[in-house]
Image (cartoon, rainbow, N blue to C red; front, side, top):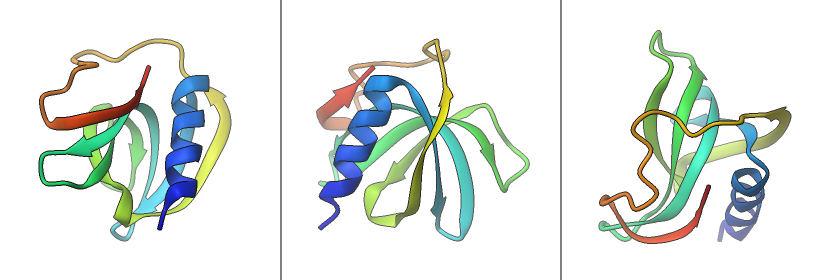
Length: 99
């Protein structure tokens, strides 16, 4: 279904690469931190939003993989975990990959 997304997102998390994608009609640039399966049985990505089409930035957001389109791994890297990062996020039933 979207196994390429799981592979590319795992690669981005491991290498700490910024990513860019379209999500529900908006473009986002994020630092991916955690990839997993939530309690609603949906695969999702928890990421620090660096840039989006909304006025808000620098915040956590959980993106459903089914709604991510046009994923691009960027050459830019991030070096630190963001405030509030929880590698054992309680919203996740199962974690596939984390920094």
